[in-house]
Length: 616
Image (cartoon, rainbow, N blue to C red; front, side, top):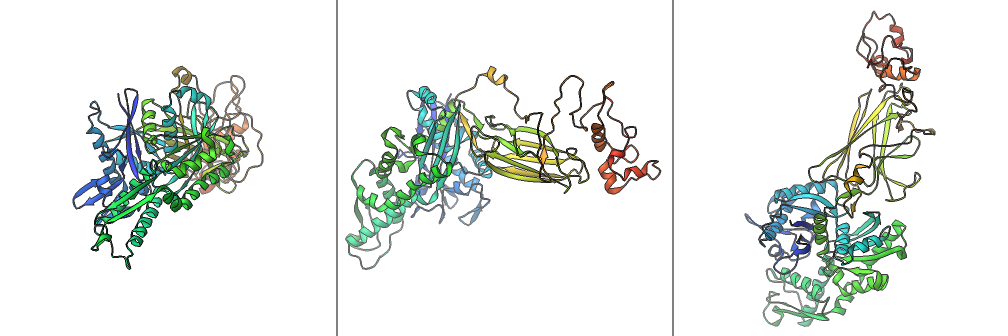
């Protein structure tokens, strides 16, 4: 069986396959990844290297009838305006994915259809972007089994390629690694940590101002200036049709060749619209020329390392190693700076940095690894502690799966008529303490009965996590029946590094269950705060801690007064069919009620005989 991974990149896209225990990158005919470019040439769609040949400058977006890097549009809510049409980004992306799939299938890989794959995504891709990428893949005939962040795929691909893979994993437990991914579109840095059997991300930072495309722009301008000076031109005559795109291709190739050579010559026939020797471009460029030309951009990119370490509170000496990936790390000046900073022992680089992410995704598919929640999904309890709804380490959904979680909380102080539920995650992935800082996802507010006693009105919380790693939250108050919904798109997740034993899984606590110590000392809470009420009692037949609306009457069991009052609060009057809250708000409709005066008073005046407990 073959296992596919696909790195849909901003600049280039690449599929990889693990078959027979070996990983292979499915490169294009020029032994390079496929450009993420679509040319709308009349009714024809041209994708890849041929489409890129129409681009005259390394610009993200639309250039004439060509779309470059449609990935940047995913999740933005914007249409792509090209060739006189407004096209959904997923439709343009589907053209690239279909092209990559067609190229892979043409290789006759033992009949494998390439109909499913693990897809890599940027750390900062929003949930809507993941959703649209899945739609594009379906259009192209590819099912996404699961998403994985690019730094995790790169790191796993690097480790999986080592002969002593398992030993390295054992040595890296609790170690922190910097993944340095410098590609054509952006420079992305991610701190990762090996926590037990899970690889998690601590923090990431990106810099779009120093991507490889900026190097190409600088190189194109320098070459043009050299040609102008070489022929002593008094005025710029202008380029011939298609000359800029051919120069861009030459500059990109020169940038790669200079990683192994000291100098290269750029040749572009019929470059300028002029007669004589100046018509043809012939410029020699050396490695020192490129280093001097790009020095400012390189140093700006390397400074991003300091920004990340400072923000995460991580000491550089505490890093186990730095893994350099992406096409730009092949530039000698970048590699030399990284080696100088981290030392030969702590600097790691893939032999083909632009293939590592796709290969890592293929290995993840082959090894059947699963995503796990890196940081607990929590709510803020009234005593200012955070309670997990979804625990860290929980396996996340695969294709077509949905995970559901439910819990109930109670409004501690309903006097302002509102209950507030704050959802958050810890900022750090391990050893989380109650006082540790949290990152707030959202705060949801629902209306409650302002006249209810504390800890009486129940608030239901229902969560679902889908295969796009989007959390849908629905919160509803039981008496006011007010509801509010929200979506959380920025879950942080990690990658398990080995398949767990089924017996071990069976012995674990069921997922989807929020826990809390039954004995809690509560401090003063803000208005609208919510809390969990324990229903754990000591001794058979003791029901004193069960919330009143949930208690069931049993012969011989004494029900405390508080539970009677709570039970009556949720029970409807058999005269008018209204709850206590509705009667207090609108009054009683049965004028002959012998106790009508009591209906207008707080509900504790109601007797058990009028609103009996459930007989079970």
